[in-house]
Length: 235
Image (cartoon, rainbow, N blue to C red; front, side):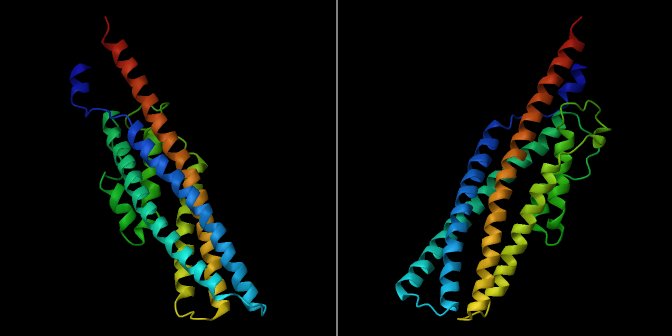
């Protein structure tokens, strides 16, 4: 038994990467709700202008400046959160080897490439995380038949919201292109942006639970495995 264990890579607890990922996800969530409030304020200005009300130039310029600052903050947060989340997920995937998991469908490289390859990034990241979720289940003791273990609907809900966020951001960008001073197009674009920010907030909220669930499951599974190996090694 000891010879078999020695060939396994070490298990690395996910506490630190999980804390970074969760902290940045919470910051993303908070900023997304702030963005929703700013979006709704701009929509009100646009509706007032459409209704014939006079909108002061100063109010419009202040709204534009606020949007610009908020955009930079959100982009910076998104990049930082993406790096932290991928670092956490990569380590979670590496830990599967410490559990002795066999025949995973997706290599560690897909943790990163799954998010970067166009079209493939619509489904591959979910498949990778689903696999990590199943293989991390502390109730699974078989190195080969772990694929039958259940997966919470929470994971699918998170992924659909994440994809919806990206789709809505794209629609907002396309509807804003060439809008100029066309109030109808500007309203449509801002409506898509509002929905996108709401999706981002809920998606980040659910992602916190995904990170916590997999991190805790791996820790529990490792402890169970250590206890089982200690009992097998004892006379």
